[in-house]
Image (tube, rainbow, N blue to C red):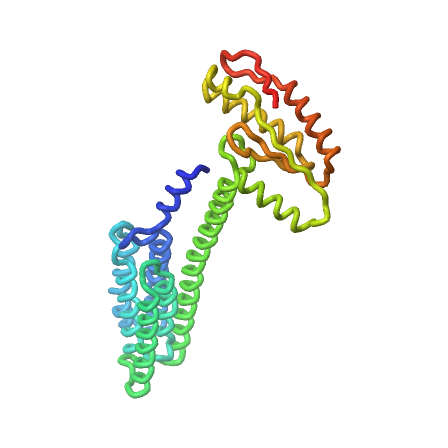
Length: 324
């Protein structure tokens, strides 16, 4: 993953003004589906409870929610939260006016509030105002029911059945909405973590050779010294002899191949013994913790001998040895 890929991903994940993210539309669409199923169950129960007239109350809502489920997604996106809010609040008010407070329809406010709180475009103040409005509406309906009888009073069996249906679908709706949002958040956090790791790696790595860059090497040395202040260490620096002639004769692509193959050799030789970075150009810096000057000299001598035995082939350049 290069920087350009990361840049495109970041811009693609950021929603533009007025655009509703896909997962948000998905949560609302699932809610529409649940509400359509809810009204089907409601009408079935009303019929078996011998309240056939009550089916007429739910029939328009069933048709509206079913139509919204079938509409293409792009039609719902700009106004989905407003449409969903109006419909849910409309049903809550209608249900309580018709059947009273004890059926529990007022709790449909809860999944609505969850959806609104996860809106990516609404300002925090607007969310708080919406929550206050829901609270005020709930209080109003409660006190209204204290002073006025419902239009269609239900028997205890009907109250119990509708209470059970309302509670079940409210609970399911909250679970589904939270599951959609939490899954998306987890996926986004994982992607961001991978991007941050990649950016950190790129910030610490020389892009050509894959070795640490100078800044990362200095950080590595500082951490090592801070962690083990009494431990001895050695450093060494070297460059490639006649490297300019390689670039001038065979081209810079050939020079890059030389740097890459030498870097691979250095990494293998230093594995578990120290660290190496590309200091700049054809210069390399070696950090050798736990080695005194004599031990470091022997190691660098052996490394130089291994470099002398390395043969590099690049197109028409033939056999090239890169003395360091």
